[in-house]
Image 1: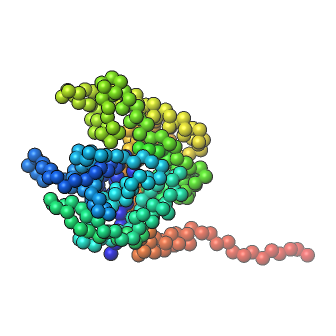
Image 2 (image 1 turned 30 degrees about the vertical axis):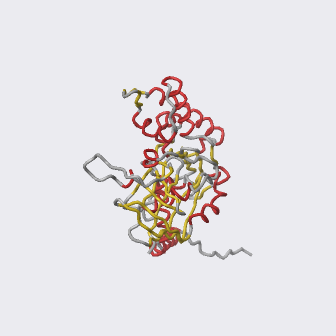
Length: 360
């Protein structure tokens, strides 16, 4: 039986969940090696800190391991993610975390930026089917087989809609009235999606080529100008979370630099939102994504009907899982249709036929 996963292969972070466990790691890939690494901590090193995968006889470090141990490291921000095998490496690294035996079956729901949906078929072909890889576990490499018989690629922000308004088994828990707008601020792009009566409206939805990477570039330039530090984007994640940077062993507070960059990003996105949408037409606006959490304090006061999604960093991933449960659990789905049909029958008014009579 295939395990259903919600998987968000973001430009900044990969998020994956099965309803019981969830994982997140930076979308960073580096040259792998087999040199021994040792933890000075008493407890065992978490698998997320030493994630290695071998695909097509090439070994890669992924996530934190790449940042710490690889000589050549990259975070692919290209339009179609076609540099090397970046997408496949991150995809299979995420799935490997749920592998329990030699052969493992998965059905996966994932998302693409709205303006990248035309790439869905090509990306599906790259990861659908069977693939033999090797992973590093408990101090040694292990051979595993991953089989993906079905994969569903959807507009990225729909994940947040499903996580906000649908339960984990895919059943609706609320029916928002009017138009709902999802503002998904990611690392590479910001997606503006419109949903009305549970229907995605592509003509009113679009992707913007701005995101956290824009703020990261600004922060990196400031650090170079003020402190003479050259910091790659993948190395800025922890710096921005802590709001501090180490210079010659001294921790310096850079909260002001980060706040200015995030405020400028929020203004930029707000201008685009008002250019693309008539905001007053929306009943609900939901801000989501890692960027949404980062700039929420600057953006939300300008949008009176807006709110921050519950756990915005993982909202898309959790919503994909909700949708996967709806798609691939036929018993539950059949019961849902029966319930819907019963409700329709109960509320529908049947008008009796009336014979018109005329006096004559």
